[in-house]
Length: 601
Image (cartoon, rainbow, N blue to C red):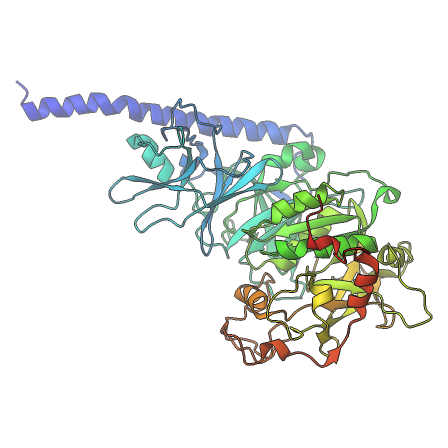
């Protein structure tokens, strides 16, 4: 006769065995379906593998992350709550310096007051809910959701949950679902990840440009492309950086944070099927040793086609576009865009590096007046050069010329008495003179750096009118390029790009055009800039490095403490040229108001 303890064990076995068997069946089914889909994908082409491409079917050590976890109203995997959010599938997670970033397969519209981040305690097996920090549109049909960093002893495998009726509720998680969620992939470091992959697709070029942090390539130099490979998978790369099934191609160009690779033949012939393919980069090992390649970087990048104007003729493109990357500079955007639109810029690409001000509201307001602006969420910290390369890939299908400069930089055409005063569209007219040039693919303009000009607060009429005292000698330059004539590496130093062989740049004389760079503004404004830089290879001012660099503020050091007489510094020449020009051409004749001083409504 069985003892009470033995009968209890038999009862528990009967309870848990079906759940375990169900888990195995789901896992086996997922593996089989993934294999079938992948074979179907590559077999859709009679020549499945491109020259230089290798096919390596790799069975992952764990397929838990293949099973999508849907969190709805009450947080259960099979919940049927009437949440305002559809099923949310988290495609990737990256630990950023001050938050956890989730990439979600659904387009969410902010504000998201009823959406919570779900954290799992590794020790006590508890669940904690915290409201999301923010939501951004990402790649048109997806979203970026920012969550607080996980508390101590909590997993970074954070999920999302729609709150019922605006109230926090109990979250019931079965043991099996708990294990599944804790095994979902997380990129543990923002500075070691493949973060974007763009199809470069036109009549002459058909490959992929992959953006990666962690390759540690030298700044402003081309790398040896033979050392790198790209890997394509239908599934996530697991903790060992392997996908379920992988196609591998060779790199053909590499520099800084970009690697350009060949595409597998199946993608070449079926680009519409590429949107769900995940991509990563690895270093090549000894070709004579099986499996000698270094482990590829963790990846959240899926192939993206930014060419929405494929086949658009050169005559149908905008003459002049502009691209910038910014962080919390919404208050300066109106002046920058209205002024340069008057000079002839027709199309704007705004790369937003995690702003939390009213940037989108300002862009929406400007677009109501036909300023043709798109905002692109670019969450990757310290990646300005890569962002400009990404922008150049987008712009070359829409624009003949692309200006790359910051929102505190303004093109200006000085003139002497007796000369014609520059009028509307003068910048566009300038670049159009060289659109068909067989020699020039870039126009460079020197910059004059302006100081606080005696001010202790931001000027109400804008920087072009408020700041009138500058350093005498020019610093650096800014460029306008023909994006279709950039080098295959997309190598740039923010201020200029490397061009295709046979092309060179044109240096404009100061007497013809200059850029006013309002670099050293009133202290409170400048201090915000001091906080963080977006450029990859420029040291943050808080870091004790490169103190003599022109990218730093001379004499400021590494602490955001206002120096003595800051308002009078960087003032060697009083120059009111642009101020006078702006007041003559933009000020309302009756009130004296400038268009960026007030609402455009």
